[in-house]
Length: 206
Ligand code: MLT
Image 1 (cartoon, rainbow, N blue to C red):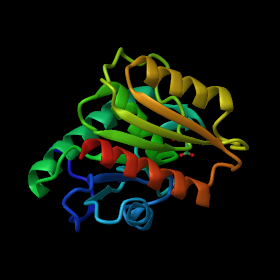
Image 2: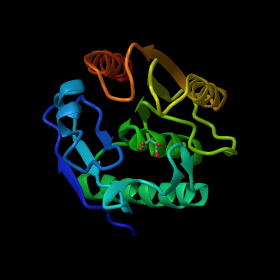
Image 3: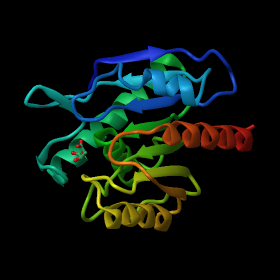
Image 4: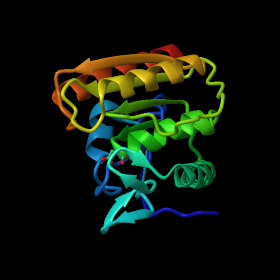
C-alpha cells in the first residue's frame, strides 16, 4: 500500500458526498480544506499531499517542463493515488469521493477518470489539462464532471481544455465545461459554480 501524508475530516452531514481534495504545485494537504468546506459544507474531506517534489514543491506527478508531463510517471502515480483512495475508503468508511482538483491536482484527477474510471464518483477540475497524450478508452458511465477553465490562463491553452472536455465526454462522462473570465488562479466564480454543481449532484443522488 502507498501511504500519503493527508488530512481527513469526517462528514458533518450524512447526505453530502465525500470530497477528495487535490492541491496544485507547491501546495499541500491543508490548501483546499477551506475550498472544500465552502463548496460542500458537511462533506467528509480527504486531502492527500502529492508525493513528488519539484525543487521542494509537492506535486502529484513529475513533469519535464511546464505543461509537458512525464507520462510514465502520470500512470504510476495515478495507480498509487487510486490505491490510497481505496485504502482510505476502508479506513474511514466513506463512499467513492468526488475529486476537487486545482491545476496539477486537477490533472491527476483527470488521469484518475481516464485510467481508473471506477475510483471517483465525479470530479470538479479547476484549470485542468489533458494529462495523457494517448489515454485508454475509459467508460465513465454518466459520471458528472465540472471543468472550469480560465479564458486568460497562461498555462492551459483553450484548445487543451476543450480537448479534455471532449475526451471525457467521449468516455461517457456528463461534462459541464465553463470558461471563466479568469487566469490560472481561482476566482469567486469558481467557488459559486462548484457549489451549485455539487448541490445539483447531491439532489440527483438523493
Ligand atoms: C502541471 O504540471 O500539472 C501543470 O503544468 C499545472 C501546474 O502544476 O502548474
